Length: 402
Image (tube, rainbow, N blue to C red; front, side, top):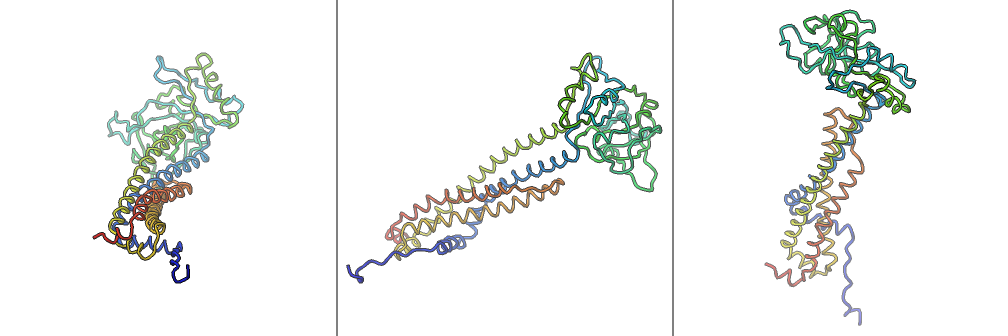
């Protein structure tokens, strides 16, 4: 066969040409492309948020535990016993004799009622508790004073320190240079000398009014038996200390003394939030699936609408592989556009929510990579059938379409 009769060599499309053809199909129908990519965007944004918010919460929890310490134990009698179980008056001294113990302190429920003033209903407790507290309490629980000062070790006067929540509910704020505000506790006036910072490891102290141990005895009739003992111990001996505390405080009935680790409660709360995150991750997958169906539907409609274009390209020498590549590229680009938009929205939502909660913003790189990868897979899966269907059209069949 001579050169004149030889059929022309098939034209090869460069990757850049295939990309331009895919973009041309999207830009020609912009609104349809935006609406089709919306489902992909919602799914990817949800995936990023579901991964980012728990990660930010975990980082905040880790920072809190690093600052407050995980070696704090909380000892109290088993509640609702008849007669009530009482810890010994010298509980703190008994616990201090345990070798690995670093610090210990105690509080006691005085069963008194704190009110903003004597005009408030005596039965309105505002959900607050009046606790007798030792002067070394803050050192033991790693608490901090937000304003004012804490109770002195030898506090003799009727003064009170309010927890963060208690001060908010009573409407108390300390202002430098102003007289100390006063509250009534069982019809006795107490001067507020301090307000505490939030204490995640001791939330009961946040909702309490703390008075000195001796003033609680003399003014409120406190019997001297602590209701909660806080213990700091060496990390390497924490479990050993936890095991001997019940028998130390009640040798006869150690089963009536319970020991808890406040940091475990925070970790359990975080685990619960992570479980809910799994549910939302499933919803994100559903949204992504719906988005993929939308992309496939858009591509099928595009094939039907562009039969004449397909036929013309086939008549001009485009082979089936090039037609498949064009429509598959269009589908992938549509999904990637939705995935990129969803990733940006998810990152912004995560950063905004973390900032609102006061958490450090954490967006796992893995979640972003998985989001983009999922969008790519959805684009490929959604575009395969429309691309194959377009490639199967013969030039005469496509050009004959009205």
